[in-house]
Length: 424
Length: 112
Picture 1 (spheres, rainbow over the protein chains, first blue to last red):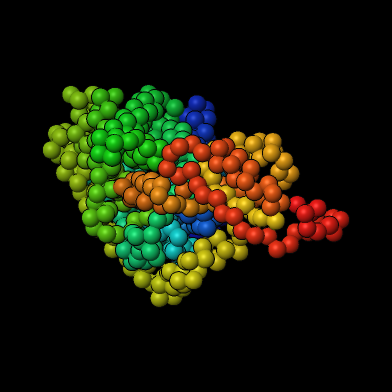
Picture 2: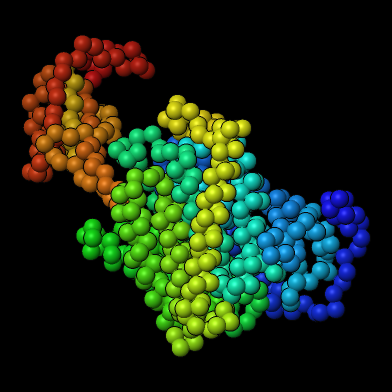
């Protein structure tokens, strides 16, 4: 019934709204959208590709690129509607499937709705792409596509609605998550851990040496992520205004501090600073400042940055080794832990007395805000872990998740794509 | 005729090549190889994952020479390839049964 109504709506001309769109806001949001897409292709794609063995370099690039294409279509078909189509507490409904009712003149806030939905689409794209890092070198390509389609539909879009959608229940509780600490990073991070556990370790892990085959690519990718993240954080202001300006500043500060924090920690612990360390530290800082970017000031950013660099260093090295799981590219250690650090510290540094922009909760206390933050964190962890596990099991039952032993030894580039990355 | 195979440190290749030309060696074949003897490898560390790398990069130089050049070639090789530190390499001398120049079909001492 709902689908028929949606199709019927397609035939109607969209209502032009009385509010004028703001040219400055629109210009910035068009740019921010491009920047966030750039974060996935080629930013994240290169960041990850450089870290795997050369026989799998193309498979990583293929996964990121194909996820971009697939999620684009899914977002249009039903993702946008579930996330932003309506005012339910738990989902946005189906009124905007196939982008019904969205036309060239539709407005959302001070920008065209087309720009808003494309901006949000780039977030829906990068979140599943982040999970890729946890299961590199061993997942079937067909399984990946089915998994991502289901995951964006049943995990990403609902959580995006709970936090950012009109009427979403987490947003209604006053949670502060400006650009996606819970929606993107904790979400992808815990999904990464679950996937790494369900798929199992790479053959030969941890005794066989699997060093990054081309860290130069990873550095280039990390730099692209940093630049693109201005679109991610400052763009989440949905306007070209003072909030966006502060978001840009705190993003830069936190990233630099996290990179230095990781670098110094590594220098002390391992006696040398490394390139892989400094770029991972930078990404950890970007992750941690993501929920905070609309609420904290410069001093808060410094603290959040250094904390993320320090804590994520131990989460990615000590914790991973101790627990024995093969989260190959530290999706959990950087995105989940970094996201949690950021989400919790947002609850502290949003206070105006600490240079922040103010609370989201009515009680207007740090304690009250922390309760909202913790609610968001725990909700995401529990819901995503459960839903991801179920989706993985269904995909395994239908398509099969993991490649064969021979394919894994041969390398996914040849086994799954009939190509080699380097024909030197 | 002898085949002289020398495993040397990569940065010594230019010195060895020049020195061999000066004693009359006309050609050589060079391959990039990995290996170890008494020289220890190194460790690499990636986000807490430590790998011990035993194999060190070396260069293999092969020259085919007339028997009477052997002493001078060995002396030249040793002098030009030596750095005095562990890992300088080794030289293997084997007897060549036949040598053929492909373009002209010459064999034996004329083909070397």
